[in-house]
Image 1 (spheres, rainbow, N blue to C red):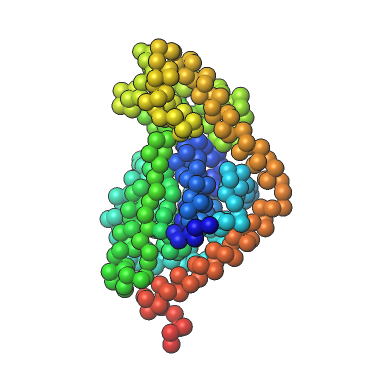
Image 2: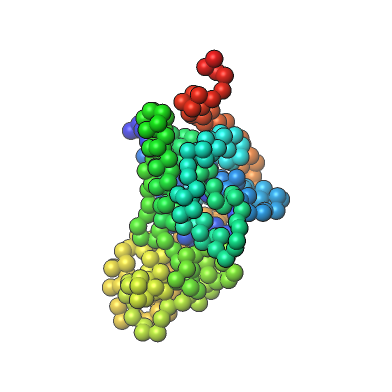
Length: 334
C-alpha cells in the first residue's frame, strides 16, 4: 500500500437539508480523497451559530451530518471525523488570524455581501466567518481542501493569510493549502430557478433535492424543474440554464459527459430527460439513505465522534503551540 503523504481537511455545517449540490460539490470528493490522503473531516458547528439556532435542533443536525459522513462512504478507521467545537484550537487560532487580517479584505467576501445585503448592520460572525474557516484549515497543516466552487474565495483568503504570516514569522509557521474543486456538477443550481444556486434555505422545497428526501419527492422536484420552451436538449449555461443544470446533475451522477448526454437525448423532449434523470438520482441516493437510517440510531456515532475529537486535538494542540511560539505568546518558552 502506498503511504499517504498529503493531509486533507474539509467540513460541513450542521444546518439540515444537505442537498445534492453539497454532495456533488464537496462530499463526493471526501470519499475519493481517502484513497490518496490522510483525511480530517469536521462538522463545523461553530460556523452554524453565526446566525441564531435552536440548540436542540443544532444537536440533532450535528448527528445527522456525522451519520451522512459514514453513509456516503467515509471510513472512520481511515479518516478523522469530529465536531469542531470539541477542539478548542479552532477558536484560538481564529483569533490569531483575526489579528493578521484586514477589514477591507473581509468586506470583499462575496458570501458576506450576499448575506448582509439590505441591512445597515450584520452579525459580526458573518463578517469574521472566513477567518474561522481559515483557522479550520490551517489548524491541521492541511495540504488539500475539497470544497464547492462557492468557497473558492475563502480558500484564496486562507492562502493569503498563511503566506502573510509565513513571511512575518517564517515559512514553517503554516502549510499553504490548495483547494480541490470539481468542475462538472460542482455548482448545482436551484431546480425552480437556475439563475440561483441550490440552497438549503430556499423557501421552495421543489428548488432542491436533499440527500434524505424520499423517492417520490425527488422525482416530483425533477419533473417540475424549470427548462425552457424550445425543446432542444443542449448544454448552454448562458442561454439554456435550466436544461444545462439538469445535464450537469445527470453528468455528475452518471459519469457521462454533458456532450455524450446531448447525443443520447438528441431529438427527444425534456420529459424523457427528466424521467431518466430522476431514476439516476434515485438510484444514486437510495443506498446513502439506507445506510444513514442504519447508522443514525446506533451507538456508533458517539464513539466515532469521541475518537475523532481525540485524534483531531492531538494534531491541533501541536499546531496552536507552534503558532503561539512564533507570535511570542504564552509561558511555555519562559
